[in-house]
Amino acid sequence: MGEAIVVTSGKGGVGKTTTSANIGTALALLGKKVCLVDTDIGLRNLDVVMGLENRIIYDLVDVAEGRCRLNQALVKDKRFDELYMLPAAQTKDKNAVSPEQVKDIVLELKKEYEYVIIDCPAGIEQGFKNAIAGADKAIVVTTPENAAVRDADRVIGLLESSEIGSPKLVVNRIRPNLVKSGDMLDIEDVIQVLNIDLIGIVPDDELVIKAANSGEPTVMNPDSRAAIAYRNIARRILGDTVPLMHLDQKKGMFSKFKKIFGMG
Amino acid sequence: MAVKSNHVTIKGIKDGLVFLLDDECEYEELLGELRYKLEHSHQNILTGPIIHVDVKLGSRRITEEQKQRMLDILKQKGNLLIRSVEFPEPEQAQVPPYKIMCGMVRSGQVLHHDGDLLFLGDVNPGGSILCTGDIYILGALRGMAHAGVDGNEDSIIAASHFAPTQLRIAEQISRPPDEWETRETSMEFAFLQNGAMQIDKISNIVRLRPDFNVFKGV
Image (cartoon, rainbow over all chains, first blue to last red; front, side):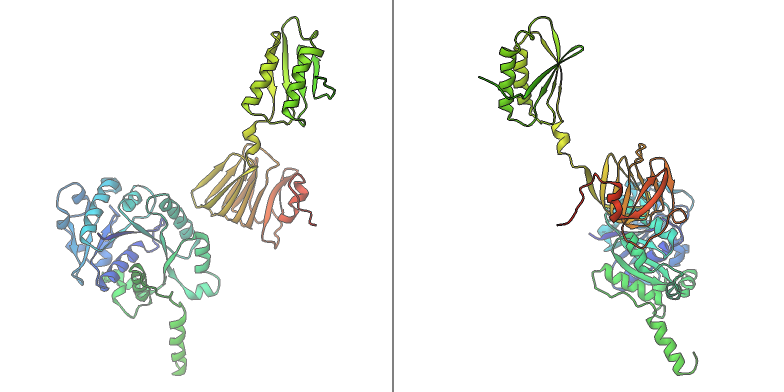
């Protein structure tokens, strides 16, 4: 029996879909059998980020309503044989499925896959309730901004009062130079308010935007700083102890080299 | 049985009698004296038409059984009609003056409490604590705290890390930082003075609340 992990945040645009796609791909990279589930019915994105949009035939709503078998709706990834995705419907809305239906589908997937990564929509309404229904664990994504931290706090409260319990935290899109100058919340500040375990920090990286647009998860690109961060998160999910990334280390070394060669 | 001590005082009021029972002597002794007074010394007063009786026990706490024994003695006199028995509620006396709770009050969560509350944990922005009495937070207050929600203006709010988004005491609403003078102590409390919100160091709480158990040192 596999494990279902929901990726949620409350606020939109903090990187839930990117995190889901990259954690899922990183787990597949580590040899795990993974299925990604997009529960953002009506505003699906996971297929686009994964570059699998044109392969969709059936979706989550079709499975829930019995128009197809679960296996028929799963889209196999281009890069990995053991990475699949269950897309959301684009034509319906969040009320098209019930939490019980999602729970049944996730339960079915857990029999087949070692990890089921559920991409949750923004908000705390029906879509959120659907997404967390079948999850065993949760990852809350936030950026170092007050608004995102407030929403993350709200979602953590809801998760804590659900069966899932205390979630793990990903602080996304950190800009070390802004943190240093005091213009961005420090990771410590975020953790102090949210008071949950940190599972990873992801630096802001332009390669993530490029990767998302080309339908190739960032984690595939070993030159990307964010890719390393996502791989570390995947290893922590597997139970490895991986130290937190030093955000300014690589850049520091790089600029040192630049200086040596008279380029800095 | 010669009773000299005066543990039982019987007073006449407009519409009956009040039995004032001493609250320091032994209960057995008290019952003995009561019985004696009813049967001997005050026999003549206590006969005749029906008289309403109020029994006052002072601060003595008695059990249901002890109360029944006392009533049995009084009922021997057919003309005494017990109207009330006054003594402190036993349960009430054992309830601690405040409730202790712990955890986190996160955004969107509301913690209600009837009475005074000692909360061990943080109150995050968007979270609220509402109490009819005082609020003491051992942790960070970053959200909203409302003490004296039923209008008790004597309520206070105290927190180890005092950084609320808003404070309310009774009907008064206040927000940082323009309305309060900021200080560099870690634990502070808020109270109302002449209808205005004031913030002070926790060590000065004794000035406001001399009724607290004050530690005076040795």
